[in-house]
Image (cartoon, rainbow, N blue to C red; front, side):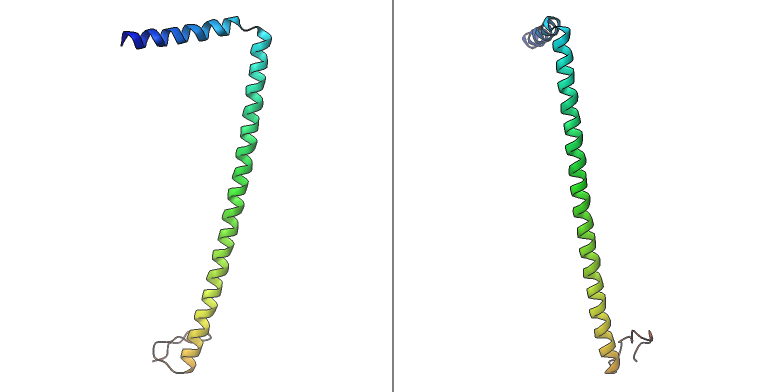
Length: 99
């Protein structure tokens, strides 16, 4: 435990010493580089969000189209069944059930 505490203290001291040894210009350059990196990460995250959103939109459109196709097929099947007089079928044009 003491060894671990000493190691942490030594690391903190080295960091503090390193920061003190840096000139103000070096610190400003480091801050500018960090800011540029942050901006780049923000831009990449925004782009990723747009890609995800456009993919979700395409998926929703595909589901909507598939549901419409299924609805049309079921309606055709019910119209045919009602025309044949099959019990339980619903005539889509009138909404009446064949009994």
